[in-house]
Length: 168
Image (cartoon, rainbow, N blue to C red):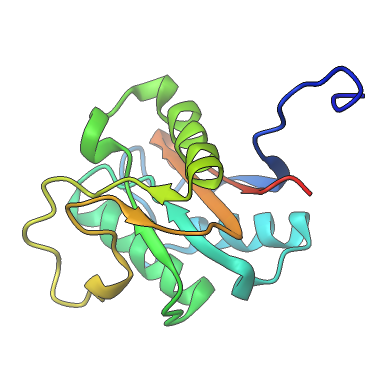
């Protein structure tokens, strides 16, 4: 129907997941179990193999506990995939509270549409355990996005992971 009326289709929503780990009001579980579960359930819902994900728009609020737990969950879910690119929209916008997830989903769709992933601004001192090779640097990068994952994690352990791909 969209094609019949000449609408531009920017991306396809493949699936997603919502979880609530309720571990702490502002901190994720120390092992990132709620984050990992949310990503794994999103993969299962979408039917996408983890190897197909090559772009993650991380929730990344620049907190020591949250960012590291999300990074560890990404590594648990995707391993050391050299094709994976990870960035955070909040590095450019700040935290938009209730609008953050929506803007980050748009960033994923724009990456799919344009073939560019935006930079990680102000990333100066990553934790030593972080493989900075997966992180987008201070400049935007070319990336032919196969499947994009957008993570949003809120107070009280409310977690969301959604997947987008180019429309076929």
